[in-house]
Image (cartoon, rainbow, N blue to C red; front, side, top):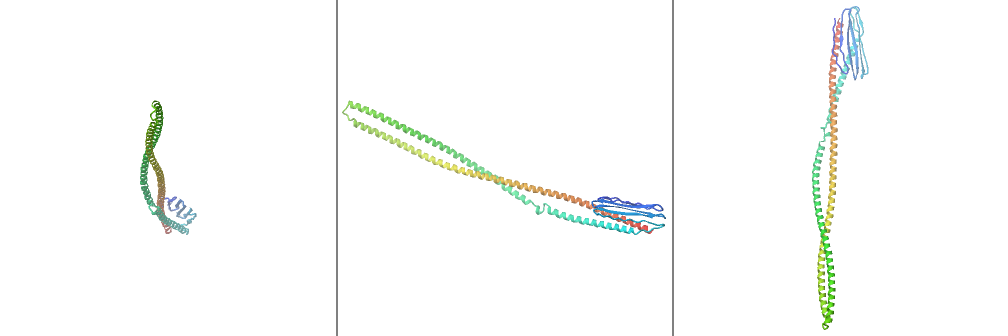
Length: 387
């Protein structure tokens, strides 16, 4: 008789192979072999088991079972079935019980490792969940919304201040420039008036000198004429008092000259007083205009200084705003990078957990198959004992 048992192979860091069992009767020798092989990061597990059942006088049962753990487990152990023989019947040796005990111990240790891995996975999931909750951007420690509000408030304060300050400074500057231009025109008019008055004074002085010169020349000519007439009259009519007549004429001309001189002096004094008064008033106006121009220049300089300070403050605020935006953009970029890294880690952890779940399922499948094979071996051994 013959039967054949074979199980499909699975893999967990290596491979588990199926086994085959053949039973034979008569003098034919039958073999039953099973082979387990696995390999992975934790080590390697391999071994073999073979058995043979024979009948008749020359039959024998021989086999061996060996197994080993290497790598992470760093140890090895094995066991074997002993040979037995007999004529019409045979008995199993006690090594088979030891081998089955070893198999049970190994299966128990394997299941214990599976439970330890499950507990480690659960602890790791809890730690990952806690760490993700602490590092999440939605947590209070990582909430930057109030910084955005501060940035918006600063922008709302800076923008109107910039526009209003610029408009005020521009209007004030234009008004000051218009006042300066008007005062410059007034100063030019006053300068022209002063020059005109100086030219009038000079022309009046020249006219006065010319009138004095003409008066002196007329007086000389008149005196010469009077002297000539007196001499002629004296020669013609010596009986007339020429001295008295000459004195009267001299008095008349002197009175006329004095009157003309006084009139000229009064006219000159009045004109000079008017000109001096006008010059004084113009000088006062010029001085007042100069003072106003000086004050306006001082005001303009102060406004320019204030404008420069406002522009500097504006530049400083813009620089501060740009630095703040850059800093928060960098922080957001870092947070996004951290989130991406955490998501990648979570994805890796999920993938690893899926792999571990698959491995756990495979281990459970392997456990089930091992139990089935152990049950099969036990049934075979019990059937052999019954024979």
